[in-house]
Every structure is written in structure tokens, then in C-alpha cells.
Length: 181
Image 1: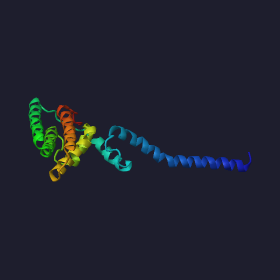
Image 2: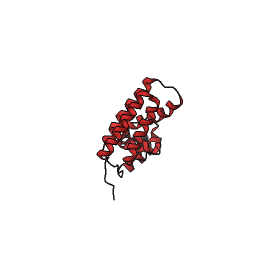
Image 3: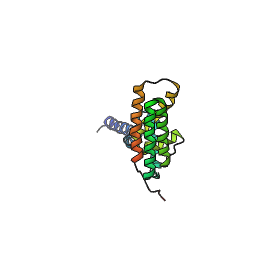
């Protein structure tokens, strides 16, 4: 082998090693991001470099969450409240949406969720009800919007349908994890 061939082979090896070093962070980011996107599909359309930190933080408290199951008496109480909300919605859809959000917050509060702060609540909901987190945010926004402007009945009915699905999901889900010591 002559010197030129040896130098060419060494250059190719060096370029290969450099390209592997440059590609390594991309590969590790993808490896870290993929499980997060599979676990938290809702809301994952945000830029990945911002979402990774947010979702990574969401994953940590899930292991220590202690969500209280509701007693049969509490379930009956909230069911009666929900029936009253549906009756109110039939007479006054805007007000019914607001009351639906309040009943859902009351249920979540009774289960131990941080229901007073929307950001904390939706972050906690993303752990246990990832498919419904976005719907709860929409319900909250539309409840606020319905008091300020006239919304179409079709939009209000659609929101109330999602609220009812969320109601049934959170009322009957008994997610209890023992606190880690």
C-alpha cells in the first residue's frame, strides 16, 4: 500500500468517527423522546425540545401519586350534581358548561387532584387521563368564552358531550397507587 492510499483510508476512518460523534446526540434524543411521545400523545405537537422537559417532569410524580377512590356515597352525590348540570344545560347551555366544569373540578378535588390551579390540574390529568386532558382545557376555555359571547348551540353540545365522557371516566376510575416510602 502506498502512502496516498493509507492517508485516504485514515481520512475516511476519521470522517466516519466524526460523523458518528455528531450523530450521537440526535440518536440519544430520539431514544429519549420516543417513549415520551408514546406515553403522552396529546400535546406532543409542541416542539420536542420544550416538551421533553415538561413530559419528563410529568412522569416523575406519577410514581408517587396517590389518587383517592371515591366512596359510593360520593359517586351518588356527584351523579346527582351531574344530572342537575344536564338539566341546567338544557335550559341555559352557557351556564351548564360552566357548572359542568365546576362539577368535574369538584370530583377531581375529592380524588386528591390539585383542582384549584388549571396548569397543575391538567398536568396531573395528563398522567391518568391523557386523552381527556385536552378536552378539559377546551371545556375550561369554552366555559370562560360562553359567558362573554354567544356561542353556537352545536359547539356547546359538542363540548358538553366531551364533558360527559370525562365525567364518567373520572368518576368511575379508581386509580390508587401506594405512596412510595
